[in-house]
Amino acid sequence: MALKSREKLLLLFASIAIAILVFDQIYYTPQNRKILRLKEEVRATELKLNESVLLIKGIEAVETEVSRLDKELEGLKGRALSKDRFEAYLKHLARESYRLRLKMVSLIVQEERTPSGEEKKEPSLSQYRKVNLQLVLHSDFISLGHYLKAIEELPFLVAINNLQVERDEKMFPLLKVTLGLSVYLVPS
Image 1 (cartoon, helix red, strand yellow):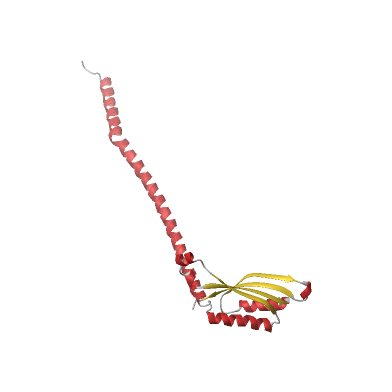
Image 2 (cartoon, rainbow, N blue to C red):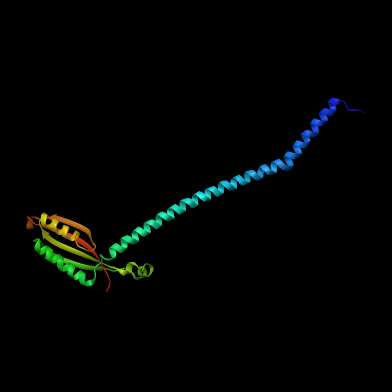
């Protein structure tokens, strides 16, 4: 039986279609899946890279802040008091109160102690001792302002923790001033 030219053409197209289908199933589809998998891996790697870049920027910012704080700490080290300078500071408080005509009613000195467990964790903090001063003064407002300005101009670190000014009719025109100060001492 002889095939007509139409059947030969149909058979040719059918064999081409089967060849394309076999090519698609054996080569093209697996390669396409492999390309998609590789694209996903590239996206995941890019995300990790972006996270790494952000972490590096964060680390650089932290390093910059640490170096700035180290420089600030170096500057503050010279402003801590020794025991001798602390005694001179107390005498200065008394002289300034006398010069400005302030009446010092009471002065309470209290050393702040750190728990022994914390000293072991952070040895750099045990390097300094914090001493709290609680002063009660009778003063007028202008003298109090000059007194606080004199404290601010001291060459060492003094922190004013609290300031309470009360008006008492018994002491008029003077004010009752409660002043809380903190000073850091270098252990001797």
